[in-house]
Amino acid sequence: MAQPITAADQDFVFVADGIDLVRDGRLLLDQITFAVRSGEHWALLGPNGAGKSTLLRVLSTYAHPTRGRVDILGRQLGRVDVFSLRPLITLVSSHQLVHPARSVRELVLTGATGTIDLPARWTPSTADLRQADLAIDLMGLGPLAGTGWPVLSQGERSRALIARGLAGRPRVLLLDEPAAGLDLAGRERLLACLDNLRTRHPELATVLVTHHLEELPASTTHALLLRDACRTVDLRRPAGRRQLAAGTKPCAAAPHPGAAPFSRSPFAVTRSSLSEAAEATEAQSNFAPIRRSSARVTSSHSAPVTPAR
Image 1: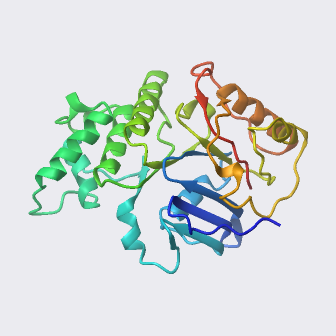
Image 2 (image 1 turned 60 degrees about the horizontal axis):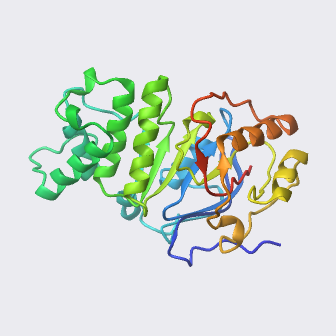
Protein backbone atom coordinates (compact mmCIF):
# COMPACT_ATOMS: atom_id res chain seq x y z
CA MET A 1 0.00 0.00 0.00
CA ALA A 2 1.32 3.43 -0.91
CA GLN A 3 2.61 5.54 1.95
CA PRO A 4 0.57 8.67 2.73
CA ILE A 5 1.92 11.87 1.25
CA THR A 6 3.32 14.39 3.73
CA ALA A 7 4.62 17.91 3.31
CA ALA A 8 7.87 17.30 5.16
CA ASP A 9 9.85 18.23 2.08
CA GLN A 10 9.79 22.04 1.91
CA ASP A 11 10.09 21.80 -1.88
CA PHE A 12 6.38 20.90 -2.00
CA VAL A 13 3.92 23.71 -2.63
CA PHE A 14 0.81 21.50 -2.76
CA VAL A 15 0.19 18.02 -1.37
CA ALA A 16 -3.31 16.58 -1.75
CA ASP A 17 -3.94 13.18 -0.14
CA GLY A 18 -7.22 11.40 -0.89
CA ILE A 19 -9.41 14.50 -0.91
CA ASP A 20 -13.18 14.40 -1.50
CA LEU A 21 -15.45 17.40 -1.76
CA VAL A 22 -19.23 17.08 -1.38
CA ARG A 23 -21.66 19.95 -1.97
CA ASP A 24 -25.46 19.64 -1.81
CA GLY A 25 -25.16 15.86 -1.84
CA ARG A 26 -22.98 15.83 -4.98
CA LEU A 27 -19.48 14.40 -5.00
CA LEU A 28 -17.47 17.05 -6.85
CA LEU A 29 -13.97 15.69 -6.08
CA ASP A 30 -13.33 12.01 -5.45
CA GLN A 31 -10.07 10.71 -3.91
CA ILE A 32 -7.72 13.22 -5.54
CA THR A 33 -4.07 12.59 -4.65
CA PHE A 34 -1.11 14.43 -6.15
CA ALA A 35 1.84 16.63 -5.18
CA VAL A 36 3.28 19.75 -6.80
CA ARG A 37 6.84 20.91 -6.21
CA SER A 38 8.41 24.32 -6.73
CA GLY A 39 9.24 24.85 -10.39
CA GLU A 40 6.71 22.31 -11.66
CA HIS A 41 4.00 23.30 -14.11
CA TRP A 42 0.83 21.22 -13.95
CA ALA A 43 -2.18 21.06 -16.23
CA LEU A 44 -5.62 20.01 -14.94
CA LEU A 45 -7.47 18.37 -17.82
CA GLY A 46 -10.97 16.96 -18.05
CA PRO A 47 -14.51 17.48 -19.35
CA ASN A 48 -17.00 19.98 -18.00
CA GLY A 49 -18.06 19.10 -14.47
CA ALA A 50 -14.97 16.99 -13.76
CA GLY A 51 -13.97 19.24 -10.85
CA LYS A 52 -11.05 21.18 -12.34
CA SER A 53 -12.09 24.64 -11.17
CA THR A 54 -13.31 23.18 -7.86
CA LEU A 55 -9.88 21.68 -7.25
CA LEU A 56 -8.31 25.03 -8.12
CA ARG A 57 -10.47 26.71 -5.46
CA VAL A 58 -9.25 24.20 -2.89
CA LEU A 59 -5.63 24.89 -3.82
CA SER A 60 -6.26 28.63 -3.53
CA THR A 61 -7.80 28.16 -0.01
CA TYR A 62 -11.27 29.34 -1.10
CA ALA A 63 -12.78 25.87 -0.59
CA HIS A 64 -12.06 23.09 1.89
CA PRO A 65 -12.31 19.36 1.19
CA THR A 66 -14.95 17.27 2.92
CA ARG A 67 -12.47 14.45 3.50
CA GLY A 68 -8.75 14.00 3.05
CA ARG A 69 -5.84 16.33 3.66
CA VAL A 70 -4.36 19.26 1.75
CA ASP A 71 -1.01 20.81 2.65
CA ILE A 72 -0.22 24.17 1.09
CA LEU A 73 3.34 25.48 1.38
CA GLY A 74 3.91 23.10 4.27
CA ARG A 75 0.77 24.13 6.21
CA GLN A 76 -2.33 21.95 6.57
CA LEU A 77 -5.50 23.49 5.18
CA GLY A 78 -8.01 23.79 8.00
CA ARG A 79 -5.30 24.31 10.62
CA VAL A 80 -3.77 27.49 9.27
CA ASP A 81 -4.91 31.07 8.84
CA VAL A 82 -5.65 31.13 5.11
CA PHE A 83 -5.00 34.88 4.99
CA SER A 84 -1.35 34.14 5.73
CA LEU A 85 -1.19 31.86 2.66
CA ARG A 86 -3.19 33.83 0.12
CA PRO A 87 -0.51 36.47 -0.59
CA LEU A 88 1.73 33.59 -1.72
CA ILE A 89 -0.91 31.99 -3.99
CA THR A 90 -2.44 33.86 -6.90
CA LEU A 91 -5.62 32.64 -8.59
CA VAL A 92 -6.09 34.18 -12.03
CA SER A 93 -9.57 33.95 -13.52
CA SER A 94 -11.32 35.71 -16.37
CA HIS A 95 -14.16 36.36 -13.89
CA GLN A 96 -11.95 38.82 -11.96
CA LEU A 97 -13.80 42.10 -11.41
CA VAL A 98 -11.99 45.03 -13.01
CA HIS A 99 -12.89 48.71 -12.68
CA PRO A 100 -13.52 49.87 -16.26
CA ALA A 101 -11.66 53.15 -15.70
CA ARG A 102 -8.39 51.42 -14.82
CA SER A 103 -5.39 51.24 -17.13
CA VAL A 104 -3.25 48.13 -17.46
CA ARG A 105 -0.67 49.51 -15.00
CA GLU A 106 -3.35 50.47 -12.46
CA LEU A 107 -4.92 47.01 -12.73
CA VAL A 108 -1.57 45.30 -12.23
CA LEU A 109 -0.86 47.44 -9.16
CA THR A 110 -3.99 46.04 -7.48
CA GLY A 111 -2.08 42.77 -7.38
CA ALA A 112 0.41 44.37 -5.00
CA THR A 113 -2.39 45.21 -2.56
CA GLY A 114 -4.49 42.09 -3.17
CA THR A 115 -7.61 44.21 -3.67
CA ILE A 116 -10.21 44.49 -6.41
CA ASP A 117 -9.42 48.16 -6.94
CA LEU A 118 -6.70 50.55 -5.86
CA PRO A 119 -7.19 51.46 -2.18
CA ALA A 120 -8.04 55.07 -1.43
CA ARG A 121 -5.03 57.20 -0.48
CA TRP A 122 -2.64 54.35 -1.24
CA THR A 123 0.63 55.29 -2.89
CA PRO A 124 2.67 52.50 -4.49
CA SER A 125 6.28 52.24 -3.46
CA THR A 126 9.16 52.32 -5.90
CA ALA A 127 9.45 48.55 -5.51
CA ASP A 128 5.72 48.11 -6.26
CA LEU A 129 6.02 50.20 -9.43
CA ARG A 130 9.13 48.32 -10.54
CA GLN A 131 7.49 44.93 -9.96
CA ALA A 132 4.36 46.00 -11.82
CA ASP A 133 6.38 47.19 -14.82
CA LEU A 134 8.39 43.95 -14.84
CA ALA A 135 5.18 41.90 -14.83
CA ILE A 136 3.67 44.03 -17.59
CA ASP A 137 6.76 43.62 -19.77
CA LEU A 138 6.91 39.88 -19.05
CA MET A 139 3.38 39.52 -20.40
CA GLY A 140 4.24 41.54 -23.51
CA LEU A 141 2.07 44.51 -22.54
CA GLY A 142 4.72 47.24 -22.21
CA PRO A 143 3.31 49.43 -25.03
CA LEU A 144 -0.19 49.07 -23.53
CA ALA A 145 0.66 49.95 -19.91
CA GLY A 146 -1.38 53.18 -20.06
CA THR A 147 -4.25 51.70 -22.08
CA GLY A 148 -7.69 51.45 -20.48
CA TRP A 149 -9.30 48.08 -19.76
CA PRO A 150 -12.36 48.55 -22.06
CA VAL A 151 -10.28 48.80 -25.24
CA LEU A 152 -8.10 45.74 -24.61
CA SER A 153 -8.63 42.59 -26.63
CA GLN A 154 -9.57 39.36 -24.86
CA GLY A 155 -6.00 38.08 -25.17
CA GLU A 156 -4.57 41.32 -23.79
CA ARG A 157 -7.01 41.17 -20.88
CA SER A 158 -5.94 37.62 -20.07
CA ARG A 159 -2.28 38.60 -20.05
CA ALA A 160 -3.03 41.72 -17.98
CA LEU A 161 -4.75 39.60 -15.32
CA ILE A 162 -1.73 37.28 -15.19
CA ALA A 163 0.55 40.31 -14.83
CA ARG A 164 -1.65 41.46 -11.95
CA GLY A 165 -1.16 38.08 -10.32
CA LEU A 166 2.60 38.39 -10.64
CA ALA A 167 2.69 41.83 -9.03
CA GLY A 168 2.27 40.28 -5.59
CA ARG A 169 5.38 38.08 -6.05
CA PRO A 170 3.57 34.76 -5.45
CA ARG A 171 5.18 31.36 -5.05
CA VAL A 172 2.31 29.68 -6.91
CA LEU A 173 0.26 30.85 -9.90
CA LEU A 174 -3.14 29.20 -10.48
CA LEU A 175 -4.60 29.82 -13.95
CA ASP A 176 -8.27 29.03 -14.62
CA GLU A 177 -8.66 28.57 -18.38
CA PRO A 178 -6.49 31.56 -19.37
CA ALA A 179 -6.79 30.80 -23.11
CA ALA A 180 -10.58 30.40 -23.16
CA GLY A 181 -12.17 32.35 -26.00
CA LEU A 182 -8.88 33.36 -27.63
CA ASP A 183 -8.22 33.12 -31.35
CA LEU A 184 -5.14 31.28 -32.60
CA ALA A 185 -2.86 34.33 -32.59
CA GLY A 186 -3.98 35.43 -29.12
CA ARG A 187 -3.57 31.93 -27.72
CA GLU A 188 -0.06 31.48 -29.13
CA ARG A 189 1.01 34.87 -27.78
CA LEU A 190 -0.31 33.93 -24.34
CA LEU A 191 1.43 30.55 -24.35
CA ALA A 192 4.71 32.13 -25.44
CA CYS A 193 4.46 34.61 -22.53
CA LEU A 194 3.79 31.77 -20.07
CA ASP A 195 6.80 29.84 -21.35
CA ASN A 196 8.93 32.96 -20.98
CA LEU A 197 7.60 33.52 -17.46
CA ARG A 198 8.53 29.99 -16.44
CA THR A 199 12.03 30.42 -17.88
CA ARG A 200 12.58 33.73 -16.10
CA HIS A 201 11.19 32.46 -12.77
CA PRO A 202 12.26 28.80 -12.48
CA GLU A 203 11.21 28.62 -8.82
CA LEU A 204 7.57 29.52 -9.58
CA ALA A 205 5.03 26.66 -9.57
CA THR A 206 1.95 26.89 -11.79
CA VAL A 207 -1.29 24.95 -12.16
CA LEU A 208 -3.34 25.60 -15.30
CA VAL A 209 -6.90 24.44 -16.00
CA THR A 210 -7.96 23.76 -19.56
CA HIS A 211 -10.20 21.52 -21.68
CA HIS A 212 -7.89 21.44 -24.66
CA LEU A 213 -4.40 20.10 -25.21
CA GLU A 214 -3.52 22.88 -27.65
CA GLU A 215 -3.91 25.37 -24.79
CA LEU A 216 -0.99 23.87 -22.85
CA PRO A 217 2.29 25.82 -22.82
CA ALA A 218 5.29 23.87 -24.09
CA SER A 219 6.86 24.18 -20.61
CA THR A 220 4.11 22.09 -18.97
CA THR A 221 5.73 19.34 -16.88
CA HIS A 222 2.80 17.32 -15.52
CA ALA A 223 -0.88 16.73 -16.22
CA LEU A 224 -3.67 15.52 -13.97
CA LEU A 225 -6.64 13.99 -15.81
CA LEU A 226 -9.93 14.32 -13.94
CA ARG A 227 -12.51 11.82 -15.17
CA ASP A 228 -14.66 8.89 -14.03
CA ALA A 229 -11.92 6.25 -13.87
CA CYS A 230 -9.03 6.51 -11.42
CA ARG A 231 -5.62 5.61 -12.71
CA THR A 232 -2.09 6.71 -11.94
CA VAL A 233 0.46 5.78 -14.58
CA ASP A 234 4.02 6.77 -15.37
CA LEU A 235 4.29 7.52 -19.08
CA ARG A 236 8.08 7.55 -18.91
CA ARG A 237 7.97 3.77 -19.09
CA PRO A 238 6.52 1.61 -21.90
CA ALA A 239 4.63 -0.45 -19.31
CA GLY A 240 2.86 2.66 -18.09
CA ARG A 241 1.79 3.64 -21.60
CA ARG A 242 0.55 0.10 -22.23
CA GLN A 243 -1.42 0.21 -18.98
CA LEU A 244 -3.05 3.48 -20.03
CA ALA A 245 -4.12 1.99 -23.35
CA ALA A 246 -5.21 -1.36 -21.91
CA GLY A 247 -7.59 -0.31 -19.17
CA THR A 248 -8.07 1.01 -15.68
CA LYS A 249 -7.27 -0.39 -12.26
CA PRO A 250 -8.81 1.27 -9.20
CA CYS A 251 -6.38 3.26 -7.07
CA ALA A 252 -6.88 4.82 -3.66
CA ALA A 253 -3.73 6.92 -3.64
CA ALA A 254 -0.77 7.81 -5.79
CA PRO A 255 2.76 6.86 -4.75
CA HIS A 256 4.58 8.80 -2.06
CA PRO A 257 5.96 12.03 -3.60
CA GLY A 258 9.47 10.94 -2.75
CA ALA A 259 9.08 8.05 -5.17
CA ALA A 260 10.15 8.18 -8.80
CA PRO A 261 6.76 8.91 -10.46
CA PHE A 262 6.74 12.43 -8.98
CA SER A 263 10.33 13.31 -9.88
CA ARG A 264 11.43 15.16 -12.97
CA SER A 265 12.35 12.97 -15.89
CA PRO A 266 14.20 13.38 -19.19
CA PHE A 267 11.40 11.41 -20.86
CA ALA A 268 9.67 13.77 -23.29
CA VAL A 269 5.88 13.60 -23.49
CA THR A 270 4.93 15.36 -26.71
CA ARG A 271 1.56 16.83 -27.59
CA SER A 272 1.00 13.88 -29.89
CA SER A 273 1.72 11.54 -26.96
CA LEU A 274 -0.81 13.42 -24.85
CA SER A 275 -3.32 13.15 -27.69
CA GLU A 276 -2.73 9.40 -27.92
CA ALA A 277 -3.20 9.11 -24.17
CA ALA A 278 -6.45 11.06 -24.35
CA GLU A 279 -7.68 8.88 -27.21
CA ALA A 280 -6.90 5.78 -25.17
CA THR A 281 -8.85 7.07 -22.19
CA GLU A 282 -11.77 8.07 -24.41
CA ALA A 283 -11.94 4.47 -25.62
CA GLN A 284 -11.97 3.10 -22.07
CA SER A 285 -14.12 5.64 -20.20
CA ASN A 286 -16.62 8.46 -20.48
CA PHE A 287 -13.84 11.03 -20.77
CA ALA A 288 -15.07 13.63 -23.24
CA PRO A 289 -13.09 14.02 -26.48
CA ILE A 290 -10.55 16.84 -26.44
CA ARG A 291 -10.53 19.14 -29.43
CA ARG A 292 -7.12 19.06 -31.06
CA SER A 293 -5.27 21.37 -33.39
CA SER A 294 -2.32 20.82 -35.68
CA ALA A 295 -0.69 23.87 -34.10
CA ARG A 296 2.21 23.39 -31.67
CA VAL A 297 2.19 19.61 -31.98
CA THR A 298 5.99 19.53 -31.94
CA SER A 299 6.24 21.19 -28.53
CA SER A 300 7.18 18.79 -25.75
CA HIS A 301 6.91 18.37 -21.99
CA SER A 302 9.55 16.73 -19.83
CA ALA A 303 7.73 14.87 -17.08
CA PRO A 304 5.12 12.19 -16.41
CA VAL A 305 1.42 12.64 -17.02
CA THR A 306 -0.55 11.51 -13.97
CA PRO A 307 -4.22 10.69 -14.56
CA ALA A 308 -6.42 10.49 -11.47
CA ARG A 309 -10.05 10.58 -10.57
